[in-house]
Length: 219
Image (cartoon, rainbow, N blue to C red; front, side, top):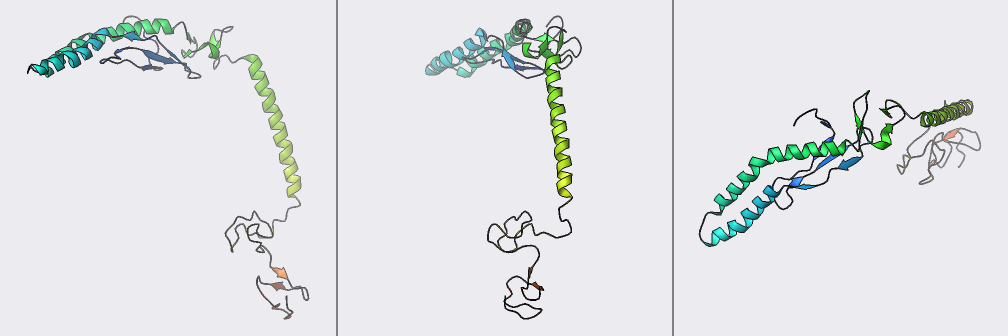
């Protein structure tokens, strides 16, 4: 290829050398949003002919006892010999066409689509972001930061009254359900946290106990 080579790292080669679908096509993508554009398909007639010769004449040659492999190899060789130059020429045409669909940023040298281009500045939106869009984004960031801070402050105030000294059972020992620090299990009703107090002497009564271990009162 002659001249400067563009799109060296943001294109995909869709070319096929042999068969009925033999031809040249390339897919280019925007370096910012990754949207793609495909060049028009160009048929590679030599590669198609090689497929037809290999299938048609090869089958006929087999009928008369000839070597079909020789014909197929010759056809493939003919297609292979002209493939490289034809592909390079097709690639040059595809690049020339792609340049009308992409813009090359003078600052970062990336190729971007119309949606990612700032025409007023002649730069991509990464290098020259849209001022109105940036202002709106900054306004919402400020709003969210302020709300986040207020919510944090409210949480601190609420947290001042939270009992942090009392241990909490986070998983029910009876059914294994998550309790989220509650007094009773929402899955089976099992009492969690502090043991029940005796209604007579206020001593701690273990779960499942029928009598108070402190005074013997039936629970």
